[in-house]
Image 1 (cartoon, rainbow, N blue to C red):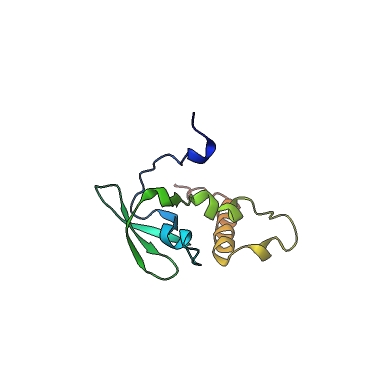
Image 2: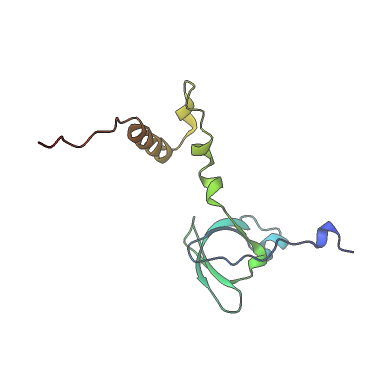
Amino acid sequence: MRTSAQITVPAIKFKRGHFVLYRDPQMFWSGQPGHTFVCKVEQAWSDGTYHLASLATGRVVQYVDPEYMRLLPSVDAMRDIDTAPLNTDGAADDMTAAAIAWLTQQHATANRRPQLPAQRD
């Protein structure tokens, strides 16, 4: 019988361009700081390993075992837009500039009156 400690996350086929959280196992098990960081998948190899680029430093990490990677879904990155309480004062204070710009554009488009084509004679 398997215990919960033995269960690992199911294998995922990561693709180039995916954003992932990577935990460097050597740094983690030796107690070094900075062992977990956000990366972008740069290359997928036929042996099942990946080359990653750290978003913060640009450092390339080669031949990464996917057991130490977790996909960062876009829904998490966009949560502030999806859940923004836009009907309260100061709602935009906690939002990023990009989120505010996107919402402003969507609001302007949604509230524009549809125009009929010019009438022909």
